[in-house]
Amino acid sequence: MGIDLVYAMGQQPGGNQGSSMLSFLPIILIFVVFYFLLIRPQQKRAKEHRALLSNLKVGDQVLTSGGIYGRITGLRDDVITLEISDKVRVKVNRGHIAGVVKSDVMKTD
Image (cartoon, rainbow, N blue to C red; front, side):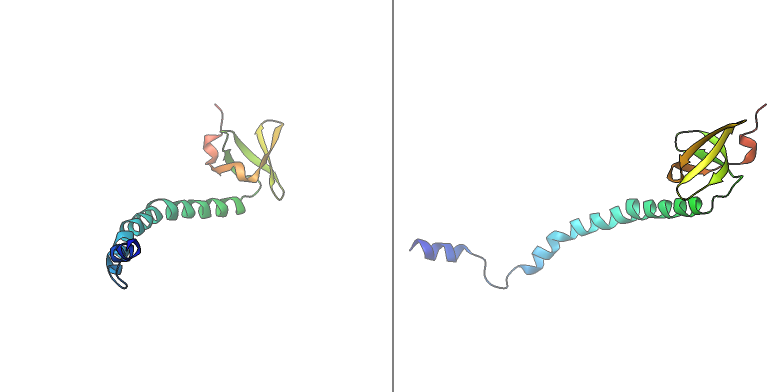
């Protein structure tokens, strides 16, 4: 008799499947909002940064992610040589270049 009670309390076959799909709707909407507000803009910025790094050339004035301004004097695969002062050169990984700056920023008074 106890087993009959368990089957009586169980869900009927084919019942309430529509409401179970509606319960996933808020999770799906949250994912869509996160995609358009967080993931997609980050992918766009990463693509722009990759394009910037691939277009670097000797003579460009750049800023590193560590805050050092310098002029590119040498380019290799992943290593960039920067001149940060007269006859002072440092080697920096290409991925640590934050951006190209205007040449008037680096002029000293």
